[in-house]
Image 1 (tube, rainbow, N blue to C red):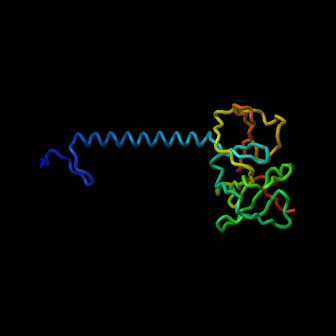
Image 2 (image 1 turned 30 degrees about the horizontal axis):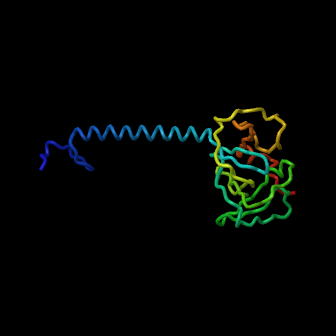
Image 3 (image 1 turned 180 degrees about the horizontal axis):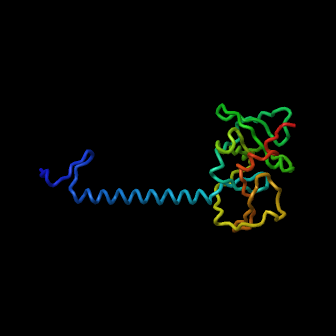
Length: 194
């Protein structure tokens, strides 16, 4: 049986003094590691984007502006009378009514077809609650630090409202980065009624 003088007694643990010093070092190391991981996650959050397609247009959405992505299979879009054609209607997502907008239609392009790969990209609650965008496909995540920023004046694709930057990836594909906070304040986007 160990002698009491060889142990440091605290409220949670009984351990020899040398083990206590090691534990404190381990706790400091763990705190440092968690701090570095949080900084890394914050940094990648800053450069990573949700990649979606709207018809043939490739778009990037900042993760802090994107909310939930909801597959449209199994969800009925209820048309709303006296609204503009690009306002596709209302979705019932777990009892919440979400207005669904088609940015391609708002840009003057043909409306997107709703198919099996179509999703509603809900805007983050802090950006625009009860608002979603119709996307024809979800393409995963992309890191803009691996892309080259190019001029928005490049005359390819359709000018989507809210697009504030344009990038080109290593395969030469162009991506428009959307600023959903800016979009949610634009009067053209807010005027859904005819």
